[in-house]
Length: 227
Image (cartoon, rainbow, N blue to C red):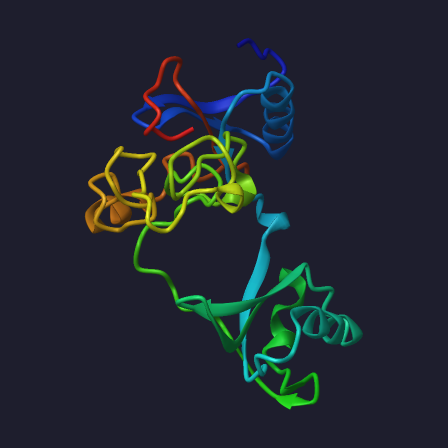
């Protein structure tokens, strides 16, 4: 792959694949367009100006539809991007997760009433384990910024998890280690350990740049590696 128009502060081969750090945001955007045009699988990260805010809204009764909450937030001028009901063990909870523009950060925490209900708006709990992509099942990035092929969390096949036809009585297969468990199982030998997570949070040596890094796969990389 050649790209003479872009400038990169770092191009490094890692166990994940080839990590590329563009110098400027314009370089980042050109690189993404190039990778998309070549149909290269990769993942990247959100530009600072495109980051959004996620909040948990407590007190939304389970009988209230997410669409109703979204419309109420719109009427208050919050321009919600998405709203979804939170659940535990497949049981809906009186909690709603909302994503809004970062510019509305100050006002949203002042909201006390939604859909005729008294509510409390909070920051989501910080996760202690590694982030896992719901698209490719790899780690340290989200599906929003992933351009890898779909890999099912249940059976490991190349389709969306929502399209999986595996029955509950059939054994799962991890796409990361081929073990008899879902790819989301935290006991998986491929699931990042706490010390690995801590190491991944160290600041980049190219911290002066405002462009996020992009990771593209090595040629012939094993399927359990990062895109």
